[in-house]
Amino acid sequence: MNKELLKEVANKMVASGKGILAIDESHGTCEKRFVALNVSFEEKSRQNYRELLVTTKGIEEAVSGYILFDETIRQKTTEGEKFVDILSKKGILSGIKVDKGAKDLALSDGEKVTEGLDGLRERLVEYKELGASFAKWRAVIIIDEQNNLPTNSCIVSNTHALARYAALCQEVGIVPMVEPEILLDGNHSIELCREVSEKTWIELFKQLELLNVYLPGTILKTSMILPGINNKNQASDEIIAKETIESFKKVVPKDLAGIVFLSGGQTAEESTNRLAKMNELYNDLPWPVSFSYGRGIQQPALELWAKDAKKNYKLAQQALLERAIANGRVVK
Ligand code: 13P
Image (tube, rainbow, N blue to C red; front, top):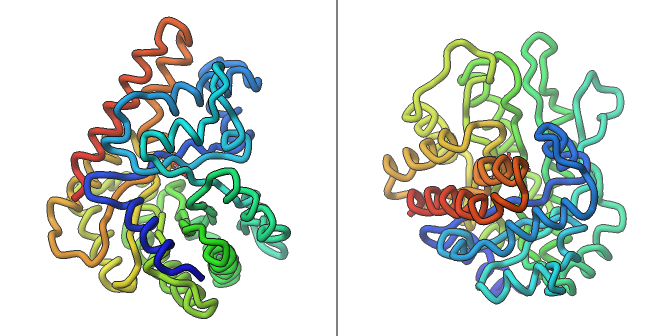
């Protein structure tokens, strides 16, 4: 394992004032987002939209890396330049989503386990050749109090897979982002979200240690501690910030390279304000705390582009840049 390289890349990903932009929507997710805005889901429109995202001028001021999807890492602009080359010229790292999605967990009542370990070693070698410096694998944890979810089997299966993925990444010199997402759906309390999140993170770091994963060359990408989206008692940004950071202080090893958040269905403003609060309230954390938003940065741009792809092209790029800069500004 090339620890120096892993550490250098991981530190670059969470450099001061910077975070990650996630544009790694699978075909299924991308289709859902396009169809919701009446945009046709065909290769041409996916290429056009992703070209907009990749060619936004000035975004490198706030974004250290883009997470790409298998299609996107191979894609080119209409003028024939590879997306990865455009990013690299701006000093932006390319990342790649390598999991194959959350599938039904066997013998379970509605829980999911993320698949994609078969053949992963070979796929990682190819992605590295295509220009990837880091990777992402997302696991999904559902909170459902009535049905006693999540189960231990779901947490252990998913965190074990995350650790196996992370070890394979590090073997080929790719920084793993390990992403357990505790879903926002439901009406659970913030206390229950904290309990489930801590349990998941504790198990994750146990599994990473078991499989010899090098933490200074690893990034944790996760959800904030929040009440369920349907809970009437929503929490202030300050409470969310404190709950989240206090939990990290309890369970996240100090030598981890950094922590970044997904937006997970929060509005663009909510995801920025809560991240800002964390960075405002805490000065002495062992790890940078930053962003790796998809919808939290893309949504306003996507909506503008969907309304009129030609007329709004530049406006959409401006909206993307504004969201990225707003987030970069709040991280230390
Ligand atoms: P959202 O910020 O839209 O939740 O997406 C980030 C991501 O990469 C989820 O896996």
